[in-house]
Image 1 (cartoon, rainbow, N blue to C red):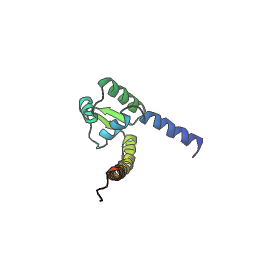
Image 2 (image 1 turned 45 degrees about the horizontal axis):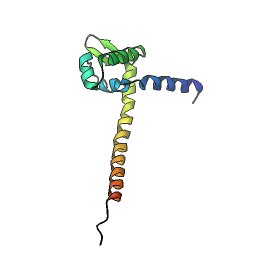
Image 3 (image 1 turned 180 degrees about the vertical axis):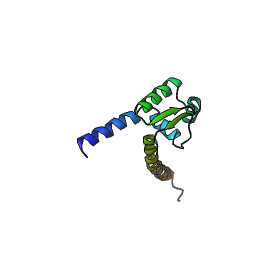
Image 4 (image 1 turned 60 degrees about the vertical axis):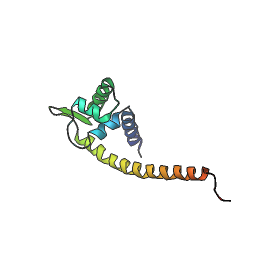
Length: 115
C-alpha cells in the first residue's frame, strides 16, 4: 500500500470512527431517503446535535446528500454501504463463534456430576 493510499484509509477511518457515522450510513443503506427524525429513530440513542454534526461531516465527505425527500447516500456512500455487507457477514459469524466460546467456558465451569 502506498503512502497516499494509507493516508486515504486513515482519513476514511477517522471519519467513520466518529460516533454514529457508520450507523447513519447503515441506516441509509436500503436506498430509501429518510427525514432527520426518521433517521434519528432508525439509529436510536443519538441526540439531535450529534446527528446534525455527523450529517454535516458525511455530507462534506460526499457520502450523504439531502434532497427534498430527506437524507440519502450518494453513489460513493452506497458503494461504502455495499462493502459494509462484508462486515455484516463477518459480524454474524463472529457472534456465533463468541456464543459457542462462551457456552464452552460455561460448560467447563460447571461442576461434574460424576460419582
